[in-house]
Length: 263
Image (tube, rainbow, N blue to C red):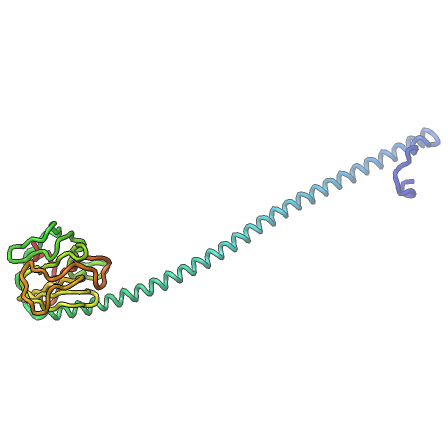
């Protein structure tokens, strides 16, 4: 009847039975149909729940994939920035290396020139090594040597940054007086590239002294100077990071530690 009518059981399906036996059969049919409907409904609900759960799972997975894609893109952008920074650092380092090499070449040239000014003499008059601390003021030593400037010793003689620092650095303000460390004759007075304004004094016996980075020179070539005579002013000319006096002592053209001469 359901198949033929295509609807639901009529309300009087059981009540219109011809007798008790038919009514019992009809009631059994109705119960079977109801159970089948319940099973079908439960299957439909389970299928719907499964689809919903799967949809949620796929949505979560899609969210994770989108987050992973976003992180990947950010990582690529960061990597590109790092590559650009590394290229910039490499270019900067290469340029700086070139400048340092050029500076080293200039300093070596100036060193050779300075060595030539005091070359060819024997070693005489070298005093015993003394403390590397500079007193507050310049004083005259026994034997006619004096500190060329008044101030703290900021850098000593010896290896520095992979090369020989052929003198000492005395920290002093711009314009502070520079004096001759001992009696002698001015051999050179002028600008010497990396040394800036520099005075070289010949003390005889192959000993010369150099006073570099001066802001101004107060002597001239051929002048006779005594220990303590004013020969210039502290400055920051040449290759230097700030005002100070770079002071060298050379014997036979080779640099020696000035602390062996100074008081």
